Amino acid sequence: MSTRYVPPGFNPVRHDRLLLEQAHDAYKSKGKLPDPSVCPQCGAVFHDGRWQWGEAPAGAHQAICPACHRMNDQCPAGFLTLEGAFFQAHRDEIMRLVHHHEQHERAEHPLQRIMAVEEKDGEVLVTTTDIHLARGIGEAVHHAYQGELEFHYNTEENLLRVYWKR
Image (cartoon, rainbow, N blue to C red; front, side, top):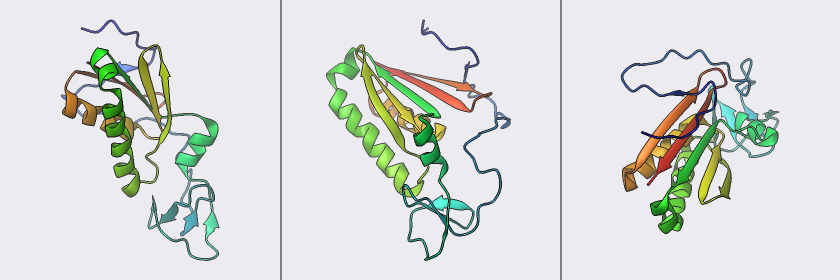
């Protein structure tokens, strides 16, 4: 059992039932964007109802994508904490896995990006623009190295905190 402090509003993720989505994400588009639209910062194109990588046609509408919006505001959706003696001994190898997983996901999903990697007091905090990326990285590290993996989802703010330790 972990003695980790969990901020108010965060609850353990239950694996035995599905949760209905009730969250309001301020970084999702309020309405449908003109098709095609291009993000002037990263070059992602909104086409056929989703953000994707590709060439934007001349005269495409410009709109900041949700990932760039989050990065500009420095407001991550996912937080992944990696810690423990095993992590310290294999830090470079584990961080290569983290970045490889992000590159793989980002190639198909432009809104899934790592925002920052911060080291403090022997642990690393990876912040992401998407909750699914934080969860996916945590699961990839757990699959490769086992250890303890915890998920805490804040339904009111659409945030996910993932903790991995070994």
